[in-house]
Amino acid sequence: MTETHIAPAVLVRSHRGRYAAALGIEPAADSVERFKWFLAAILYGTRISEALATRTWREFAARGVLAPQRMLDTGWDGLVAILDAGGYTRYDFKTATKLLAVCATLLRDYAGDLDALHAAAIDPRDLEARLKALGKGIGDTTVAIFLRELRGIWGKAAPPLSPLALAAAQELGYLRRGRHASGKALAKLQQAWADDGQAAETFADFEAALVRVGLRLRRAESRHHHSLLPQAG
Image 1 (cartoon, rainbow, N blue to C red):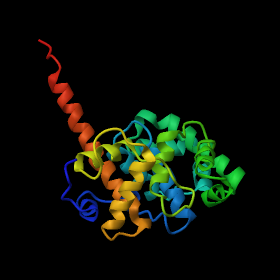
Image 2 (cartoon, rainbow, N blue to C red; image 1 turned 45 degrees about the horizontal axis):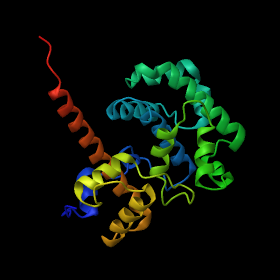
Image 3 (cartoon, rainbow, N blue to C red; image 1 turned 135 degrees about the horizontal axis):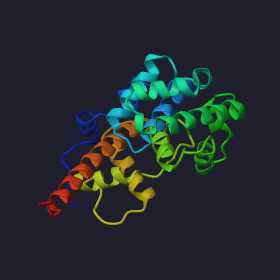
């Protein structure tokens, strides 16, 4: 293993921490803030650029459409208009339908409160299943994005380590290269964070920074792959 010379806290400062913080969302504050992050996770969970998803979330924020009942009151046409304003045009119809279904289920089954959903969950896997059951299109990616930043906030938020974070941790020398069980790799990274003098409840910042590095590595690998393809003409 190549020993890293980058302390975890330094990595966070240079690559930024939680995505929620970049949006001005404070998931640790209350259920209202956690729903805002859930909306963002739904937008980030689609095959679309981070920049477009971020811009679209800001369009929702600018219009004050950041709560389940407000989503339903806005209606399908209104949601499509917000999505289009943010550049989310490729998935506008589908996402508007998804958001209405999710909010209707959340209001019906949990009085619109994600904390009530968490309280009803038996364990981490049941929590993930309940989130997916809110509506068609809420899959593993969206749930992982959402719960990753609730690690240390919700007791049952325990998603597996992101493959992007794992790749980055190996590249930077926090973990040995090779096959790793997700749980063991996660525990080692949490220990590295603690050894750097950081609080356990802020580990999500380290994980998010690793995800950002992982995305950069994936883009670089993709560019390299395309450069090796035979050129037309």
